[in-house]
Image 1 (tube, rainbow over the protein chains, first blue to last red):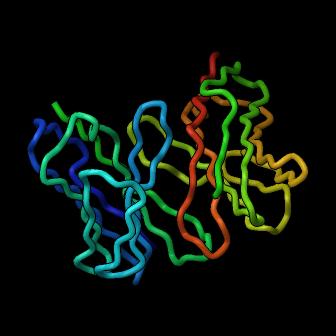
Image 2: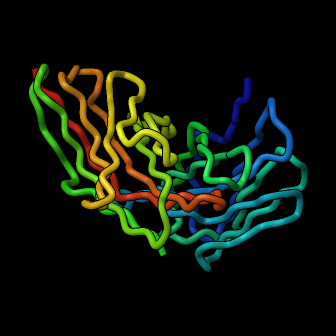
Image 3: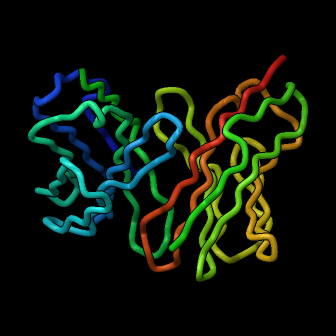
Length: 113
Length: 113
C-alpha cells in the first residue's frame, strides 16, 4: 500500500531563517505531488504541484519554492522566512491527473517567530 | 475557474442528531467533488467523492453526500452524530483531467453529549 511521510512535524523558526520541509511517498511510482498550506480560518491553499521530476508549478507567488529531486520526494523551501509563512503545511499525492483522489500526509506545523 | 463555498464555519449538533454540512460549488464543467475530514493536528482524510457516477455517494464512518446539479450543491449528511465525528470538514472540487483540488474554507463540526 502507499504511504506518505512528511517531516518535521513541528518547527519553530525565527524570521529570516531558511526552511526545508521534506515529503516522500512510498509504494507508487511517478505520483503527482502537492504542497498545500492551511492558515487559520482560510482553508487550504495550493502552493505547488509537480507531475514529474524537476517539473514544478507554482500556484501562488511568494517567498517559498519547491523542488522534486527524485520521483517520490518533494521539498518545500524558503531562503528567508516571514511571519506570514506560519501555518500548517500539508504534502499530498495522487495517482494521475484525471481528477483522482489526493491523499494527504500528516502535516507540518511551522511557527515563525 | 472553480470555487467552493461551505456555509457555516461552525456547526453544532447533539450526539445522535442529524449532521448536515453544506457545500455549494461553482464549475464551468461537470465537476468531481470531494469531502475530507481533518482531526486536530492531523492531515486530511478522504470521506467520499463524486466522480459522475451515482449522485448519492456513500463514504466512510456513515457519511453520505448527494450531488445536485440543479442546486450546484454537494451537502454532507450523517443520520446520527457521534462524539468521534467532531472534526473539521472540507469540501473540494476538481475538474476531470486535472489533478489539483480547490478547497472550501472548512466547517468545524462540534458534537455535544
